[in-house]
Image 1 (cartoon, rainbow, N blue to C red):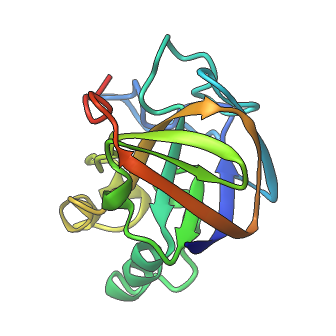
Image 2 (image 1 turned 180 degrees about the vertical axis):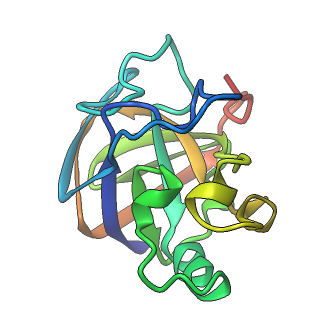
Length: 170
């Protein structure tokens, strides 16, 4: 199946993660054309690289179609894809089909670990009501099984059968 990687983002630090009860951080999300995915560790240059062993969110995916609908729904035409703090925006797929499954894009292999659930910070980063609207569409957290390079552009998707225990959050 052919999909398209529309945008890729990394961030060196956390704005929301670990900030409960405090103001949001001011770490930028940086749009890049290429990332290096390191098996079992995360993305070089990203805040979750080596976060903890077997971390379920070594990389996150977000639907381009959900992003475009959010811009319309919340009347935010200039909204950046980086506002969602997900790494890879992909078009042409239903990310819920990747949960609990191994899949590869551009030769990099992943295991879908579960939804990247939206939190109350989305109401600030996107618009009031965004957290509720994004439930069930917050993106996909995944582990990197076989590393390599991902780049913006066309990507052939290879999707395997369901993996045992892959949907358990970490």
